[in-house]
Length: 566
Picture 1 (tube, helix red, strand yellow):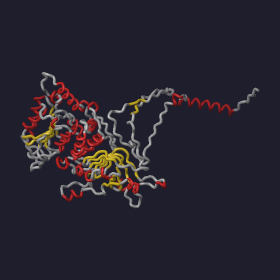
Picture 2: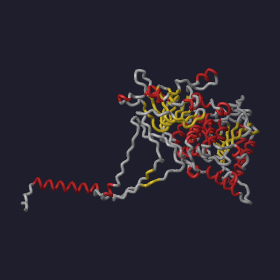
Picture 3: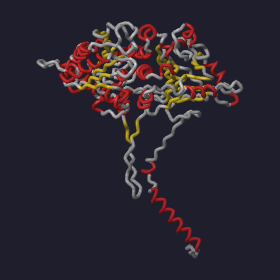
Picture 4: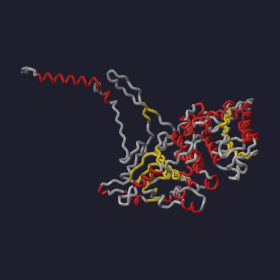
C-alpha cells in the first residue's frame, strides 16, 4: 500500500532547516564523532583531603634513585577545521607505588620518626593544638627525649636560670596514644562525625628558635639553612649528580614556619630573604604571627578540641642542638649536628649544597660556565691523578683544576667597619696581594661589600678560589664559592683569638680554612682554641702580609690538600 504524501507546512520546513543548521554547526566545530576522537579524551582526577587548602601533594614519597622517564601522550586525532596541532605536552610519570594520602577526617595516623639528630628531627604526621606539638604513637620510647627535639623557644643567655627556662615541658611537646588522640579530636562515629583535625599537606620546615640569631646573615644562611638543607637531603638519601648539580632528588619544601620570629628573621643587608626566596621560589613563609593564629584557632576552651596535622615536617631547634655532643661540646654550630649525622650514616652526597647554591647564583645572574667551575675542576684533577701522565709538569691545571686566569683571590676589606686591620698592615697586604696576582696572572678583587650590590657580591663569590678577610659577616659569602681542590678561606684574627663560625662552615663544604695570627697560621688538624682576647673587636688587628702570601701560594700549588679535612 502506498502512502499518500502529506503537504509540507511552514512548521515542517522550519524544523528541517533548523536540524540541518544544527548538524552543520556541530560537525564544523567539534568534528565527526569517530571512535578515534573518543579515545583521545583524557580525564584527570585529583582527590585530596576535605580540609586541604594548598595545592601541594598530600604525601611525601622518597624519590627514585634515577630521574623518572618522560612519557608523551600520542593524540592521534586530526585537528579541527582551520586549526593545527599544538605542541605535545610532556606528562611526567609519577613515582612507582605511591603511598595513598591519609584522610585525617576519618583516621588519625601515628607519628613516624624519619630521621633525628639533636635539634633536627624529620617527622611524618605531626600534630599541633593550642601551642603544644603532639607526637601520636603507641611506642613513645622509640622516640628521643623531647629535650633533644625542642625547647621553650626563649632567647638564649649563658646563665643557669635561662638554660633552665629553655628546657621543654609537656606544654611544648608531648606524646599521645592513638586512643588519647581520638578522645581529644575524634568525631562521634555513631553520629557520623568527622575528626576535628585539619591537615596541612606537603612538606614543612618548623623553625623553633627566636630571632636572636636569625637576623644575622651567617647564623641564618651559613648555619640554620645549611643544616636544614643537609638534614633534609640526608633524610631522604637524596642524589645530586655532577652533570646536573642544580637538581636534587629530595622532596620539595612547601612551607617554612618561624614559630618564634615575626618579620625579624631578615638581616639588615637583606641577604637572608634574598637567599631564601631565590633558593626556594615557591616557598610559603609563615611567621610567629601566623603560628599564633594556628594556636588561637585551636585554643577555645568552650569549643571541641581541634588540631592541625602536618604531613611531613623538619623540626629544628637551636637549644636542642646544644644538647648534642658536637654543637654543645665542640664547636657551638647547630648545623654540625645535622651534617655530621648525615655524613656518618652515608646519606649526604658530596654535592649536597649545590642545588641551593646554584639556585641563588642563577637568580643573581651568574652564568652557567661560572656555576660549573667547581665540578669541572674536580674532574680535571681526578683525571690527572688517575692517569698520572709521565713528564707532565705540575701546574695550577693539575693541582687546582684551574688555569692561572681562573684563579680568583678576593680580599674583603673591613677598613670602614668597627673591626679591622691597622691601616699600615692593610696597605701592605693590598700591595703584596697585587704583586702576587700580577706575578702569577691571577685575578684579584679588593672588595668593600657595602659599596656593591648583592648581585655584584655574589658574582664575585661565585668565581672566588681564595677568600680572605678579618673575622666578620662578609666571609659568609664562602657558601657561594665553588668547591675546587684548592678552595680556601683565610680568616685574620687578633692574635690568640679564634671562633668556629667560618672555620666550621669551610670544612663542612669541603674547603681548607686558615686562621692567621699576624705572622703565624693555624689549620686543621691544629686549630687553636676559641678565644676572644682584648683587641678581638678592635681596629688595631695586625697581619704580616708575607705570611698570607705564603699560605695562598702554597695552597694553589696543591699543598695542605683538602682530603685531610674531609
